[in-house]
Length: 129
Image (cartoon, rainbow, N blue to C red; front, side):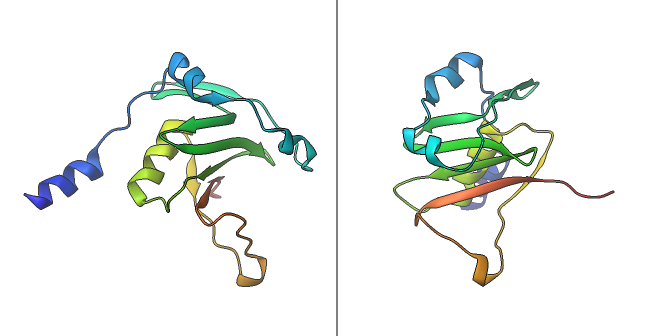
């Protein structure tokens, strides 16, 4: 029976995000972001899997910031606990368009910065074909 649960969890589909639902999660950008040397890029995308937008969101007790950096999507999610694989997967598919590859990056040790113990970053990546 345990194997059936794992199988169902792996294949569970994320519910399609609607414009109304996205508005419910949307929050104003904190004032602190205006002091950062980062330009905030607004983008709104709709596809057959849902609606996606850059901005600040609160979802299931997690703070999510989505922006475009150097033309690619970047999602930052923080919570009061370490996120598990399925939570991170749900957030990726709920808040980032389907037509992209996304990765969590671990840089060389001397470049690693961790300002929040339970903050995770997902970056859109491109592969040369």
